[in-house]
Image (cartoon, rainbow, N blue to C red):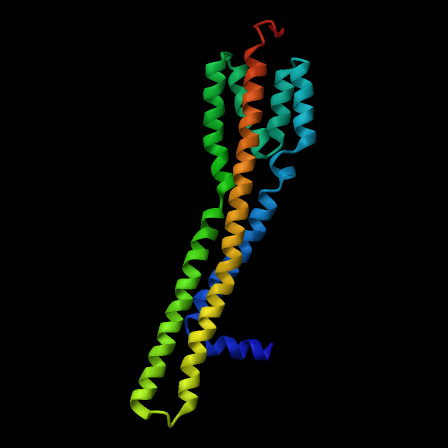
Length: 213
């Protein structure tokens, strides 16, 4: 631990914003891994329960179940069902309700994903800035003392290398996480669209007596 602290201190003042970015990246990765789990976004048991009530034409009960589960899928179902129960029964009306729900739910999926991309871009730049400041120290030492003080030279070179390595060590996993979660968000959006299309079709083909056409 002491060795790590010593290395950290050799990196200079830019190590602190880099450390902050690293902590943020870890927090965002953990949060998105939890929030974007398929079971959390699409609670299968709740959706099956809702589907059962829909087949029984018990729409208020289906809406109650949907509202009791806070997930993107059930929130979408709840908005569409609410529109249906209020009399917006045409396919066009239900599709508009689905689009309104999607506009509210999709940003929740994207969450901190773009922030990870920003960290992946900023971290190496800060690291390279540390490289520049370290090399400035080296050249200043050379101009003032020549090669007579190798300790000052090694300090500047250490700062240059450490900040670059630290910045890249943050940027690489952040970039990998960004693309992973980006693809996962796209997959979940596709599943959400399929769910909405299926529900809109199912509800729009039910007449006023609650019988399928």
